[in-house]
Image (cartoon, rainbow, N blue to C red; front, side, top):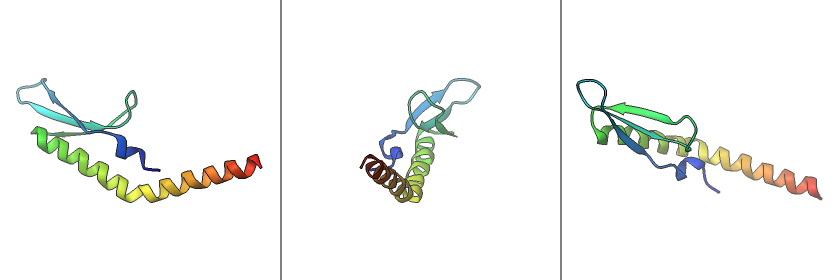
Length: 80
């Protein structure tokens, strides 16, 4: 079992509005509101998003897995 953020890819898009190009990077599930980051370069935008994604995984993955495992144990116990 893994945290869902491990499966999300960081995507970077170039904004064409305004006089200077900006880049937006995001990760998250398709069709939902993503977590996004802006920067002046493509690499900066990617790095901001990926660092945030990895920090969230390291901070919350153990708790996420523990909750999922506990829920599975409850389901098994309820079916017996």
